[in-house]
Every structure is written in C-alpha cells, then in structure tokens.
Image (spheres, rainbow, N blue to C red):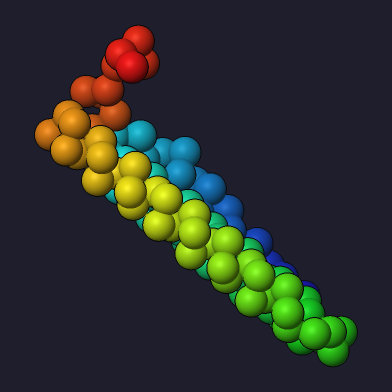
Length: 95
C-alpha cells in the first residue's frame, strides 16, 4: 500500500512540474519524461506482481524513446527558428 502511495506521488509530482513550468520548453519535456518514467515503474511492478510477460514493457520503452526523440527534435527546430526555448516568444499565428 505504501508503494502505491509513493508511485502516485511520483506521478503527481511530474504532473505538477508539467503544469507549473510554463516558461521553458526543455523543462516541460523533462517533466513529461519524468511522468513516463513513473508510469514505466508502475506498470513494471504491476506486471511483476502478477507474473505476466514483459513484452509490453519493451513496447512501452520503444514508444517512450520515440516520444523523447520527437520532443527533442521539436525543441531543436524551435531553437533554430526562434533562438530560444521560451514559450512567450512563440506566436501561434505564425506558420
């Protein structure tokens, strides 16, 4: 029961970091990766407790790595285009 509390606290700390960090894109991406890591640990312990196969964990890791690479590529393209990673400098109306 205490482990569930720790894992839910870990996940909600990631949500809090994601919702409170609105100035830099890199900090937002790090908060998203923190939440993915928390979900990975929760699903791992769930599958381990019921003696299931860990094939889903490999699939989850592949998708989380793809998500991280996509986020970093968007970050690099925005830094090259705008010069920084502040959210205030981005205009939604520009293409």
